[in-house]
Length: 77
Image (cartoon, rainbow, N blue to C red):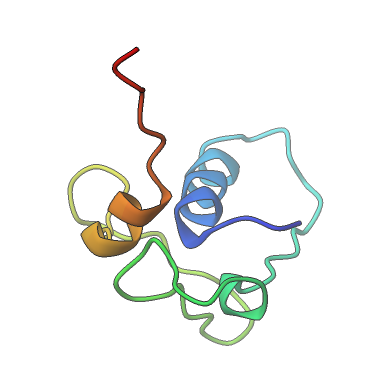
């Protein structure tokens, strides 16, 4: 699983609202795979669990510099 913190965060929200998912889930911290993550602060497990952020939206602040570097740009031609 080579995903950014943003993808992990979206997955965490999906698991939180899916009553029929009873299996555990493995989250590989994105810092193992990428030099700079899309989240300002990475997800931090507490006693083996991830807490769902309570801020608006997905509940995390995006690293705008990393997002700009990763953005696909459309050519003018």
